[in-house]
Length: 341
Image 1 (cartoon, rainbow, N blue to C red):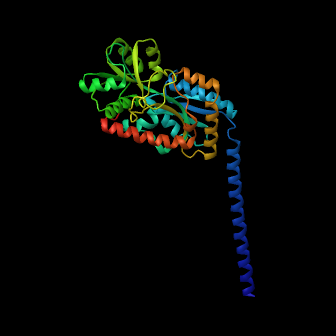
Image 2: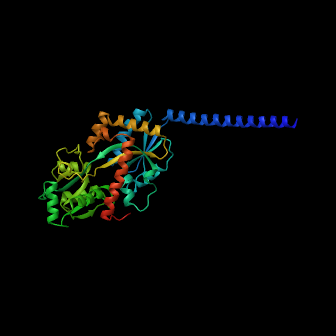
Image 3: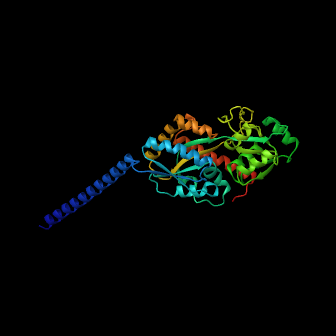
């Protein structure tokens, strides 16, 4: 009798365990199913895009143009939230620590999401806090000189600088900016010594260059295109292997036999770490479709920037590219001993 009771109790216990295990499995299945359904239904409400630079600036305008078209593709509006300051790092930090649900993104740049890691003492985020969605625009960097300089090519600039060490004064729009590092890269690759003159932005820099107060500058193509076309300054070369769509007549550093001198700025779309891969891929695909839109391409070109090529699209490319950019500018900053902010 005792044995029978024990056996019955054991069977009852096993039955309870089995039922409990079944409940757990069903609960897990429902959770996974719910998560999958939520991801499949994404997006079902507006998406916020943090723009970490001042409204009306090139990064902000480009972000609005591209994400507006992305919203049409995704059939949900993409709303811009401007969070400017500290070279884009305040907005990037907010984006990094937003919910990883695909409804908050951030438009990062070569400054906020590459150079900043080497030029800021403390940041509220690290590279691993982001999931890369894709490149939105390539902003060519250009080497320009004042119009009455007896220099017409990059080779002539290098020769002049070597013959007159530390005589040339080149401006840049702020210590630690991506454009500053582009100028430092010029010095390192060409083996020249030039004075670096920091400005509080591209506007004052261009005013002094046009007025002849400085000899040259490293600058973004959008702010240099107008003065170049007006004959107020002279463009020597675009840093990279792709000519600027706004001034196709200007050779690249690859054309000028200096292939190591590549340093275009860029804008990319990021999501917080942990955003579901399926959502990241949907965003990446929508971005690519938006970049193929003729009106978007025309507006990007008019802003003096280049559309990423087919080979420069996608989250995987962006992930690899951003990691390479971080390493590249870190080396430049260390060699130049750029002080951290």
